Image 1 (tube, one colour):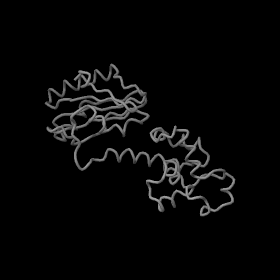
Image 2: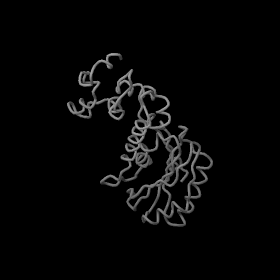
Image 3: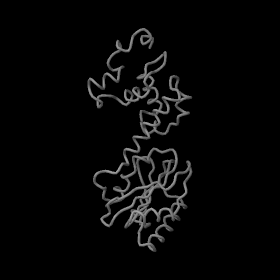
Image 4: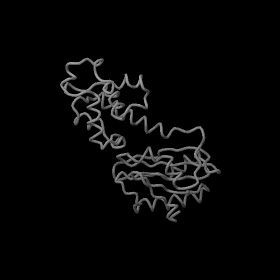
Length: 232
């Protein structure tokens, strides 16, 4: 590590200069640590940006989803060389990655199975440290015409407003809806509250002629489907 204190950046090996490596070999040639090092910009007096990035990823089991759960304060307090600006940059970049995954595609996804519904928002929600409740709105051909977050809560739960869901469905001329939320605990088994709200939403959907086709609960890399279990 001491060598970095005596060499200029231009004298470092190419693998320790990720910006130059990106230009020379293309972005796909960079590892996760090298991409993170570009965000960091610099390391500390004792380690390069690449070494600092490797340490951060190692503490997250080399899992970007785990890194996505880190807060600005966690990153600042744990890693020497990571100040507020760098921590904010990391958190903001990972959030952009999440949002990119839910941008409307050129072709609207068609929902045929519960797995189709799961895949629409799974990458956005599987690594969240808190609960979020979303609704997928479908047309008569079961294509997703809109997706919207209804509420966000803490680790243990969130509030779902039936009136707000139906308002969104009516405004978007939805023919049917799919309920969608995550369990940060990693257990996708529905709670009594999940079952009760699903039952109430199904009843309201029948009255409004906007049926609830499914309720998907996401936990880590798996999911629970009320429809598959015969509960809708």
